[in-house]
Every structure is written in C-alpha cells, then in structure tokens.
Image (cartoon, rainbow, N blue to C red):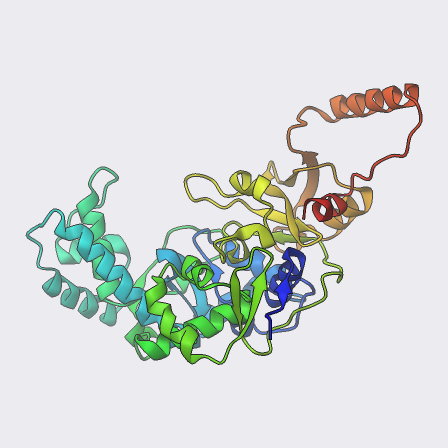
Length: 401
C-alpha cells in the first residue's frame, strides 16, 4: 500500500494543531510545554509570549509558579540552547543532552590542552551548588577560576564543560519575566531529585515527544530540532510504533499513531510568535510554516530568530517593541480584516502595549504612505478598467504552493 502524500498546507495545519496555534487551550503550563515539545528560553520573555499565544487566559504568574514549584525547569538542552521543559521531560531525556554537550566540548578542549583538573573541579562545583544555588561569578571565585571574557575561549569551554558534567539546571531566578541574567545554578539531582536519563529509553522518550509536537517529520528534522546526531535517535525511530507518510518532494515522514492531521482548509487565526519560537526551528525544511523567500529575513546569520506573526498559518512578518508600541512589519500589504485581527489579538495580554503596522520595504511617515496610496489609486483610475487581483497573502501563498 502506497504512503499518503501530505501537502505543505496539510503539514502546516498539522504543525499548528500540535503547537496549539489553531485555538487556545485550557491547559496547565507543564502540560502545555509537553504538548509543544519545549519552550525556547534564551530571551526571558519568549516562554511567556509563546504560552500567551497558545493558552486561554494565560497570565505571566502562572508560568512562574510552576517554575518555583519545580514542575518546570530551565536548562541547556536542544541545540545547546536554553529551554524550559516539564520536569518529567527533563528527567526523561536530559542526560542525552548533557552527555552530548560534554563530549563536544571535550573534543574542543583536546585541541589545546590546559592544566585544569576538570574532574576535581566538577566535584567541587557539584558540592558548592548542592549546598546552595550559586551564580556563575560566585562559582568561578569558589573554584579559583578566572573571570570569563570575550577574548579568551578556553575558560568559556571549561565553564560549559563543568556545567554539563555537573548536570546543572537553572533556579527560578533565571526565568523571571523580562529580566536577563541573575541565573543561579543547582544540580538536577538536588533540584529535581535525580539526574536526567540517558541511553535508549531516553532517546525513545525524546523522539516520541518530538513527533507528538512537530510531526509528521523526517529523521533529519528530529536531528535539527534536538541538535543530536541522527545515530543517537535512529534506534528510537525503529522501536516506536510509528505511521509513515511522504511529503510532496517524496521524503518519508514519521508520525505518532494518533497525531492530529487537520484538513488543509481549516481556518488558522493570526498568532504572535516570540523570538526563537520552536515552531520555526523544528524542521530542516521550514517551508511548512516559514516561506523560503522570507527565511533569511526571519532567521539571521548570527542565529537570531526574530519575533514573527502568522497569517493563515504562515509567517507573514516580524514584530518588535519600539517606543512602547508593538511594531509589526509585514512582508506584503495585509487586507483590512487581517489588520483588524492583528490589532485585536495584539500581544497586549502579555506586553500590555498598543500596536502599529507597516509593510516591509515601504518605509516613511503615515502621511507619505497615504500620499503613495492616493497616487497609486489615481493612476489606476486613469488606466483601462480591468479585474483587480487580490492582495490577500493567503491566496498568494496558495498560488506559490
């Protein structure tokens, strides 16, 4: 029996459903974080904005309470970046990431051997952080290590090696809304009662969580999101009872048995995504949510992934905060009903700010924009009448696909 072929639009709707972006849900923060896989936490506001876009009636204090109760934990995980995950998930697979990170750093350190006794330093670090959560400056002083600077690489590598070997996670101070820095570290074994699991069972847990949140997807997609080698995940793909599909390019896709596959015609509301939202980073081919022609605008060379917004399920522009306003920059002119929906569902539930909108590549004051629009209208009136083409980006997206 041939495998069903899923269109880009069908994959888009599957991703939106699993990422809770088709409709807001009533879920606890730990359960919601498990449903979406994990929340990027490099930028402190990101997890809050991500949950606001996904949960009904979300308030910032809801997430902070779960972090303080140790049901959600912040740690260096996927792609060696900071994420918030449920404590159950960290215990289920966290060891995979600490081992892989330590192995990579060890290879880097071997290129320029030093005289530090990392085994002894790790034991000291665990002892100090088990007694009380400590900040990085405190730990470096206690360990007799130099202050970290941007010009010396090896001290940074040694620091990251120690945090990986020590299995350190962040205390709640590192998850406060819009407050970068202030992180204090503690061993997961002290904070959560055990270290994160490693090995085959951990890989199975991780792949199952990934496909539930981002499937159907390829093995390469899973490796992209986790930052782990395909070989580490391969056995899990073989052991799990998965269904398979093909995409329009013929690539085999794997999925959990009951993962939602909504109709491609289901309506998708406008949604705001924070910086580094996982939905934009979970696949090697991001076209199921981010049109290729806009990828370099959203995902920068330095690795930054700009805050963006979705129209009809696809990234239609970026946003940021300027002078106390949420400033949207769309890739194409947006229809009036879409502009109205964006204003109505602005990030005000979290940021409590007003919104302004401009189209990328059409800068200028509001008066200048009105003059351009008026001039364009006058020119059209002078031309021979002809049917007007829709400027709805949703129709344009369908034509491109």
